[in-house]
Length: 346
Ligand SMILES: [Fe+2]
Image 1 (cartoon, helix red, strand yellow):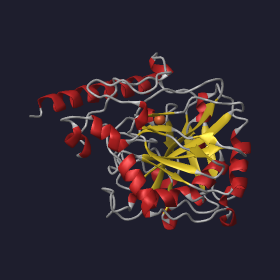
Image 2 (tube, protein in one colour):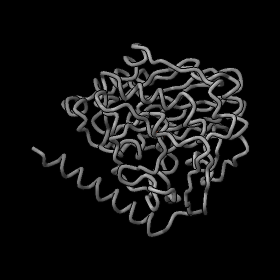
Image 3 (cartoon, protein in one colour):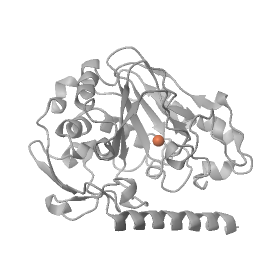
Image 4 (cartoon, helix red, strand yellow):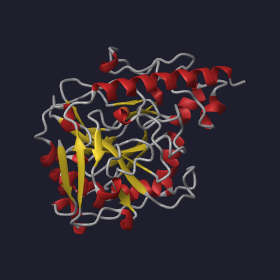
């Protein structure tokens, strides 16, 4: 399937619908200490309303249409390229607390997806595979522990934010492993995944992890109003909050990366359908592989796709069996090697 995106032609490319958002020291402290920060009033409510209108018709069962929306909608691509999220990500990467603080300022779109909550749903506690490339890492490792900027799409009222285990409390619960965790050398803790996908019951109060005692006081959660965004470390245990209803709740969840980000996991984890760039100098590059140059830059402006330009992609309607199998095998193999490394390191 050939996808051709046109840049800068939709409502979401208009500069006047956005305002710049400046991260405060308090936001930085919260994100780097606790792992999440609530950013109030990032978007105007009318922009959220338009996003909601755009995304509501996507059927809940159609997984292809719920992942990498930037490939499928000029509107969503424009929102990421011209809206404030890329600049916020750039500010996060430049924070003095981050390992990326001295890099040239950039923000490159990675993947995005939409979430739908209804009928008592929660997706269960987990750490994100694609964003957490080295393991279970604290917020400062922003090239290998990519943060998410989640936008609940609500027209009015309030919704509960993503629930995240507080990073300081998580670290405090570790005994001898604490130093390793803060050094970014903690192994990827897969053993506690409780998503339905992994055939676990997602309705447990906190993740149950070997050697760690987590309790409900460690859960961070806030109420969010239209236009609010939550910035959080996806390498901390998190889940959608249990649904309280009555309406359907939609959320848009993009991840951005600094320019030094190299994807260590195979492209399947960025795009299960498998996509390739067909645009000029990127022709033939796989989405999500290596340094992912196929993903568009939102910051700085001179790296951003120009208004009126097109991005051409080839996306398969279903993942290639060969591609899926190799991706799975290589992830399993890497997890095993990682385990051995941590076991025998010394
Ligand atoms: Fe997640």
